[in-house]
Image (cartoon, rainbow, N blue to C red):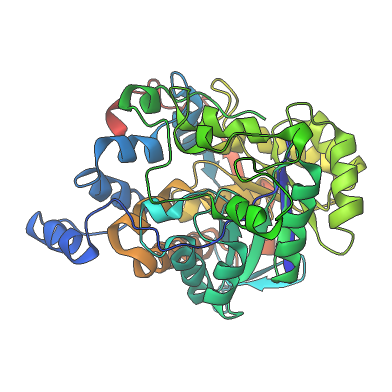
Length: 429
């Protein structure tokens, strides 16, 4: 079954495969370095600590950084520490289960991999490795439109064992937008539907282009399928883009070179259009919702779900942490549609807090990239299993036998109003 996800400034994504190579050391080399340094992976943050020891600085900071002063990046994690669990005792947890159901799909846990592009920067199998890891963990993988492996290649690699979702951006070329969603639907995906934030680390490091031989293959596939177009242009004449700017751009940071593809004037009518033209039989989730007002508009426009997300602190700096934006959105939606969340999830206790505040499931992003750098598919599978175990342990200690038992009375603010990390420094990068 396929799903389509659309960001609030919406766009659809698909990527096709090539034999692109990662720009990180070979995995046996990484393993030897970690062993010699006495490093052991015990939690999701350990992957970032390990990756920092061997990744080239430009790649590491591309994966780790946020926009501007990185306030939102840091608060995405720190904000969870201002919510406190209220454990209940003397409750049966002998048959505890982290399983949940989302749009008819059974997941082993309420944790999935959020859509984010260019996995092949971290592992030669790219998104195929991450998607297979999700299948092994029994959860969902969301493929970014800016992937380095195609919609069809990722679907084939999972052999039907992974719940696949597809992230769609609304492009200037509306026909291409629809074709990409149709390809995802044909391959068995579901759907997730413009501007990127400016990351100073990328500008300082000269990260203004996707390193060769990596490609945004889904766009390349569209050129191959549409022989009537001119060789140099990807899109329809009215939305024409010189693709050389994507791979060797004029802007200081790569994201600013790719955003020329996107519709710059999206409205809620575009969500209605996408639902009507491409997602009549697919769940459509609008990603990037951060206010009650927009959650209401999304549901009115036909969204089957909303995803609370500030895009990992890589969009607007100074926006609320995702977990702090969640309560007002839950109240506004009033149970009409499922609510997903990503941003700052690093522990099983974070998962449980999000569920208690009204999220149906949560996504992870940055930890996946660092796990992929450290050990490819196996380490992504290990990351997901660690989060599942941590979530199960937190549930047991809090007296929750199922995820449905995690109600609003399970979390509270500190009586003294404390708990927030006072300051942030880039040293964590």
